[in-house]
Length: 243
Length: 119
Image 1 (cartoon, rainbow over the protein chains, first blue to last red):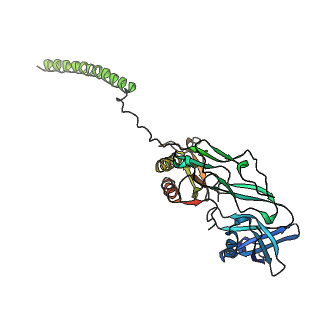
Image 2: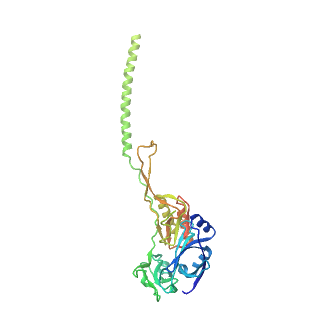
Image 3: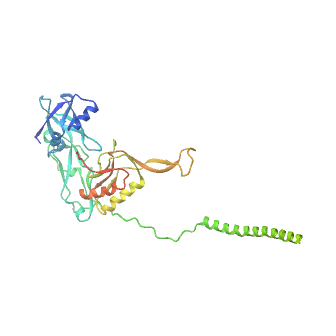
C-alpha cells in the first residue's frame, strides 16, 4: 500500500461546544492532528471528503496526506474516529502524523471467504470471534485485510490466528492460538410447552370455611328457634291472662 | 446518552435504543422469544442488557408513609444509544425483521444498527 489520499483541513480556533456543534451542522468535522514531529493542532475537515478518504479499499488504515491551512502536507493515519451513540454521525477524528520509515501499530480487518459446508448442509452458525487483528509494520505495507478460508469448516471446527497466511514485513501481535472463527450448531427454538390441564386444585382453606359456615348456621338457627319459643310462650301466657 | 454498551461488539447487527427507558425482565424475555421464534433455526442472539435495578412499589390501597415499599420488579436502565440485542448468522433483511419484532416488545423507540456504520 503506497497510495496516499489527499485531504485538506483548516485550523480550528473555535473550541466551545456551541461553536463546534455549529460547525458539525455545517457538514464539517472537528479533529486534532498530533505526532512526534508536529505540535498538537485543532483542525476541521470536510465530512464528505473525509468519508471519501476512508471508504477506499484501504479503509480506516489509509495513509492520508493532510494539508493544514495551506502549509506543507504531513502524512497521517487515522488514530480514532468518535461516533455519536444515537445518530452514528462522526463527531471527532484523531489524525496521527507518522514517519514512513518507522513501524506503526494498526488494526487490520479479518474477512472470511468461501461458504462453510457446516453452515450450508448441517445448518450451523459461523461465529466470528475476532474481527480485527493488531499488527506492527511499516506504514507503506499495511495490509488492507486478512483473509481466512472457511470453505472446509464443519460443525465443531475452528480457525485460529496462526491459520492466517503470513505477509512479509507484517508482524501479527495477536495470540496465534486465539480462535478467530468457530462453527457451532444452531440452537433450535422450542415452543414453550403448555402445562397440561389439571383438575381444579382443592382449596383446603375454602372448604374449611364452608364447613365452618355450615356448622355455624344450624347453631344460629337453633338459637333463633330457642329464642323464638320463649317469646311465643310469653305471648300465649299474656293472652291467657287477658282472657 | 449511553456512554458504554453503545457499539455492536459480538454480532453483525443490533437493536439500538434511541430513547431512555426502564426495561423489565418480562419485556426482555418477550423480545428474546420474538427474535428466536422468527429466526427458527440458524443465527445467534446476544442480549446486551440485564435487569439489575430494583424498583419498589407501595401496596394497593395503602396510605402513604410507613416506610419504603417492597421490591416489586427488576429493570434494566437503558439510555439512548444503548445496544439492546445483537444478531449474527442472518441476512440483512431477515435480521431487520427479527429486530423489528423485538422492537415491538420494547417500551421505547429503537432502531436497527449495523456494525461499523457511519451515517
